[in-house]
Image (cartoon, rainbow, N blue to C red; front, top):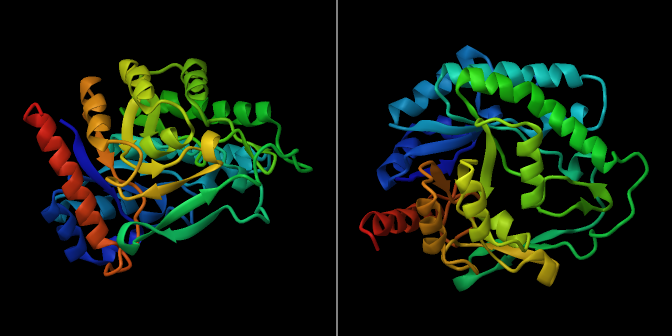
Length: 331
């Protein structure tokens, strides 16, 4: 049966009682980024045994384990932009996947090229709005950033692909040896370009290309339900398509309203307040044999909540636990 996960930032380690809170409400595992590990940021995204051990032990004291550890986009910027330092970035990833394997971290995330890595855009794409009862959530408007000509110096689409494949061809074989699965989230927002800067991992066909170019049982995806829905593609067809291949390694159990093809944007909302029936999503995952983590992903702002979003987390975990119990009972 699926597990319940949550993302935590580095500051959670400073609050042992907050980690215990996660366990108390029913969280099984956590999703983290490399910057949680001491020494990693200073080393340019290169994990070290002492730093990982420190975090693993802190989580173990709360009864939690790491399900997915994610490299950050800053750690592959030189590679994607064709700048000096690429070989060191890739060596850091190869080394880090070995460390993940040594500590039995089952999934490692490698980031794709996002248009924002090329530079900041002088266009407002997102804002916070009010939802049911006044909770605050993100609303995206991409209408002014799509179908634009490429800016000077931007990488070409096939250059982005070749640099992506360069990373994966180095990392995936090491992941096989280490017993680690490499999960690609894909572009968010899931569009071919932003302000003319190309993005390549924005739809199902792009994932198929990645998996065929670097074939391996350890090369798969973080299936972000919200991102896949807002792209305008069929979430359930995607679950069947990639679930049948054994390519779904992690799931962001995110719900949204609206799709980019229909409205030029979308809104990220509380899981029971979007366009998708999340029970049906979980049932589709169950039917393809998925047994990894489901993670609500981004935190919405409830009126009485604190900065770390404990009340929102408790709501999402309760929602997911109810769904999983219904599946277990054959509902």
